[in-house]
Structure formats: structure tokens, C-alpha cells
Length: 124
Image 1 (cartoon, rainbow, N blue to C red):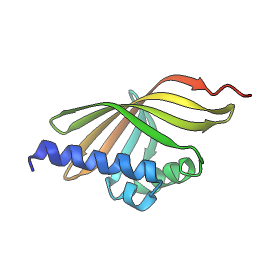
Image 2 (image 1 turned 30 degrees about the vertical axis):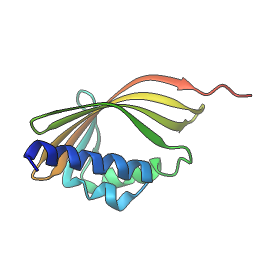
Image 3 (image 1 turned 180 degrees about the vertical axis):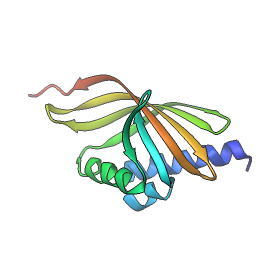
Image 4 (image 1 turned 60 degrees about the horizontal axis):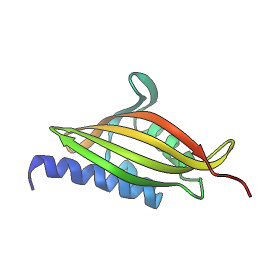
């Protein structure tokens, strides 16, 4: 496999672990010193313990699921355009999301998230 395909495969494993709510598999894709940001530079989590805590909370949502709409791989960067089904404080729905992953030494070292349109499900 080429380095680009290794990078894409790592991010794909992360994506699959997210949908499986497999916290250990998810964390295996992140570096111990990884950081997550709300784009462009609002720090959400720094280090494996904080990232684990964020995912553990998210994985309690019963309807959590990400659907990959598009993926771009360029060098050590992967950009995913996703639609994420979630349970928000105001109800269930979907969120458009762009996730940008930087991969270094075989692990995700930084991730940035851009939240797009949120659509709530219509209650019956």
C-alpha cells in the first residue's frame, strides 16, 4: 500500500469505529497527543484522555451514525464530508459535517470539525 492509501485506511478505520461505537478501536487511530478543534482553532480536546471522554459521551446516543458523502485525500490530510445522525438536546436529527484529519506517524494527530446545517426530525 502507498502512504496515501495507508492514511486513507486509517481514517476509514476511525470512521468504522465511530459507527460501531467502538471506543478502543477509535482511540487506536488517534495519537496520544492528538488534538481536536472546532474549525479553525477552537480547541475541543487535547490528548487521548480528553478525546476518549468526548467520544464516550457521544457513543451513548442511540441513533448515532455517520454517512460518508465524499472523501478527499491529499498528502497526510484527509477531508471527509459527512451527514451525521445524532440526538441533540432539542431532539433527533442530522448534521452536515466536514472533518479534516492530519495523519502523522500512522496516527491522527489533529482533527478539525466544521458543522454545517442541522436538520431536526419532525415529531409525529
